[in-house]
Length: 366
Image (cartoon, rainbow, N blue to C red; front, side, top):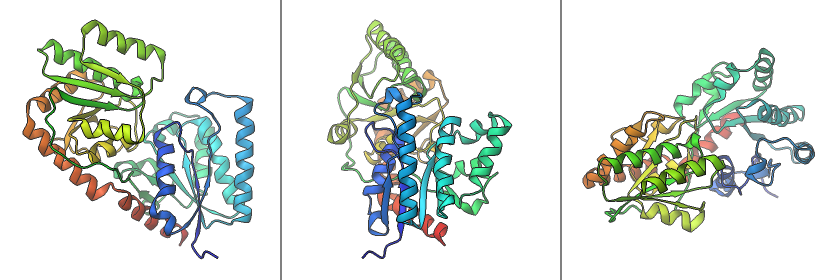
């Protein structure tokens, strides 16, 4: 009979391949399972991305079944601690709060995890009733995990600082650093194709570069379109201006790693709040110079001028300028790429994440 402490992990699993679902999968398959007896409750109540954020009787019934399963796990498995990801939107938080209340009703310790950075903005923009309910729920928990040091202030109102833990994303990838000088140079964008992720800003930046005198480069855009109007707008821009941009369906596994291995430069300029995007970790593991924006904890791993550039949000001209700088300077690309790989190995491997999670779990269970 196992003597390992039982920990219940709540969270969705892919598909679809979104950040939180990917994080749950990596945690469950990591060496953390050698240190604890990991239990898992899949909280996914939808079948596809098109159902995300939409109300339906089917989803309500599924959620009640999930709550019932959790109650049974808490009652009969008696986990020492429960890790619960929380939403930063009213309907999502209310749904997540029921998990928290079930855990506390069955006298289980609760560690929260926020996989974004917009929590405080959402709470402060909500009604006094919602704000009061958030405070009531959070103060029944034993701590919270955020993805970067700069995000600890999001919960300063609810927890003492020693109970706000920092655990950035980390994973192992079959990627090795190599100096590349493709002809044409390959620029990669890898994310869901939506305005909030900066896809339109990238296309506009490419258009600016081509108008100024097209350098020898091509752009691979890999991901799923979230809105038809965004797809039509971007494809029209590419076709009308004959831009060197090729769109690819979303890829996972070996196909995704090949895009990263083959690229010279990685660009991901989100407009909306982020946490610690997995695509940034993957690009660093591939040894790529990265152009991104200061969203969430991105600026804690993409150090401006060291392993990439941080540009202002929604500024295609700034993206174009930094792309041009990297395209023209092979030694700069190599130096920044090597630094990306070094920082990844030092801070963002699976082992680093597991060690931080394990340390946090022990503190919460103590």
